[in-house]
Image (cartoon, rainbow over all chains, first blue to last red; front, top):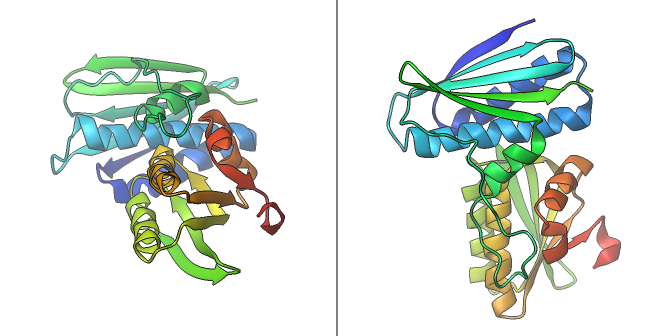
Length: 136
Length: 107
C-alpha cells in the first residue's frame, strides 16, 4: 500500500508529515518502538531539508512517499533544494562532560541510528532520500 | 502546537510542557526557560509527562540551558519522560548529563 503527500517546506508542517508517515507505518503492522524511531528519522530529515536544502527559500515543497514490501517500510523524501546528501555521517560527541558537550550533529546521527538504511540520490534537480526500516 | 505553564513548588521552578517539541516548537520552550532564568531561577524541573515526542531541536534547547545553569551552580532536571522520549535521551547520552527522574521522588 502506498501513501503520499506534498507539503510546503516550513517547520509548521512537521507534525503533519509525522502523522502521514506514522499512520502508514502502523497500518502495515510496524511495532510502536520502530514507529517512534522512524518518526524521529523522518522529522530530522525534513528539518534539514527546510533549514539547509531550501535554506529559508520560500515556496519549496517536500514530497513524501511511503511504501512497504512486507518486510521493510520505505519512506522516500523528495525536495528540489540545493544538492544535499544527508547520508554523510556526522560525529556528534556523545560522551564528553556537559561543559564540553557540542550541540550540533545530533539530527543526522539520529537518522542513521533510527533506520536500517539511508540512500541518497540526486535526480532531475531533486534530492531524494530513502529511509528503510524493518517492520518487525 | 505546544502548551507551557510554570509553577513553583518547594523552591523548585517547574516548567510543564504539553505537546511535541520539534524545530517548530523548540524556540517557545527556549523562551520559557530563558524567562525563568531571567527571573533568577537556578533549578528548573522540566515536566515532560505530557510530551509525546522530542527531536534534536528539543535536546539542543535542553543542553544550552543546562550549560548556562551549570556555570552558576544550577541545574535542569528532566522529569516524567515517556519511554519513547527516554529512548531519545539514551540514544544521545543525555541520560548521563542530566538528572532524569521518573516523578517527584528523585528530587
